Length: 503
Image 1 (cartoon, helix red, strand yellow):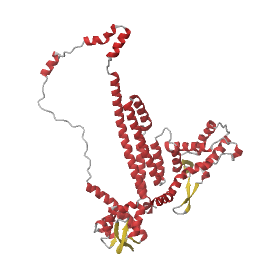
Image 2: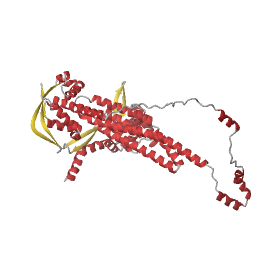
Image 3: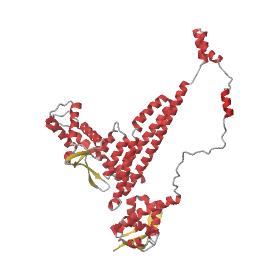
Image 4: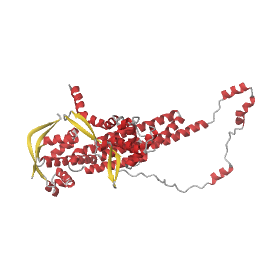
């Protein structure tokens, strides 16, 4: 029964996310239905709409993101005109070319309307409509500029990596668009893709080391290719990491108040953690690649020494002398042995120098040139205090928000609301229950009184949150005890409380 429940739950609860992931492919297959057979009596039937669509996508990706500029209609028209002539051998008049380019552009943009993707949501048991655009527009200085949307870019990148460009850079460009569009869940998937790309580069580095151990020449060749196609983008990739961290910080600041914070703070925080993890992995890869260069130099140096080392095979030389019947060849190794000088002696000038060398009167102290700065030490107690402070800040802010919205509610309702916002793992957090214990110390709270003189540990956190969110300054509420015992996850028991907002 448990397996059947899990199976049904996966089917129902994952269906919406799967449909949202599929929607980015929908415009391509809609456009594939346009085979030009209905346009001007099939005059351009040899054209392939799928190929034209992918070519236009690549053109916009190059201009919008790699060159960081928007595209005018004239630039698009000039680009696609070359495709008619080069790839399909069409020689068009200016009027024919303008008409055909306008027709294709309108089809790709769906005549300026969003594509509508219909699907059924079994969780809510109703039909849903997803709207997406491929190319959007903006007006600047009385000129219309066009740019690729995040959904279209994600679709194009998932078909194949872009040539001659860092795949990590391309993914980070997509991530910045998703953050700007507030698609934080999609951004998390992109960061996971970045982590897999960093892991791929790590595996390539390990392969270079393996080749170096077996064949220096093959290893050096693999190293050069790895540095040319993988490592040369490090500086630019680090720059994009910095930009995206700034975008996430800005998103957190914008979402730090109001209902938007309650809906998105968990996704933004998780996205920030994933991006920090990717940044750490990327920095470690950079350090490993720096060490790789030294390892390659050392391997090449050893190989050169091995090739230049003097060797002499007496057995092979004897066989050569017998085969050629020429004893004069013995001269090659007998003469050096006859000229050996086994006794060594100092030159008189060197002996005089040793005897007359003045001795230093005192020992010199050692000069330390490499000083490492002392790192700040964080004790376990400080680490625990930082964790409690951050958790209390989040719980208290959500509590005040819920009081301002609901006015009167039971602790059980707030407990369920907290699980939806922060995830059910919060119910296993000891800081949550300690916060409830501090909350129950008093029967009523006034934010104005808290700001003037906090009496308890809990009121200090109330004051901190109210100073950050002045809209709660006039809030008052009472805490009323109830005899009901709440059972939480079959492991914890908590007395139910009634929270009443006061006017």
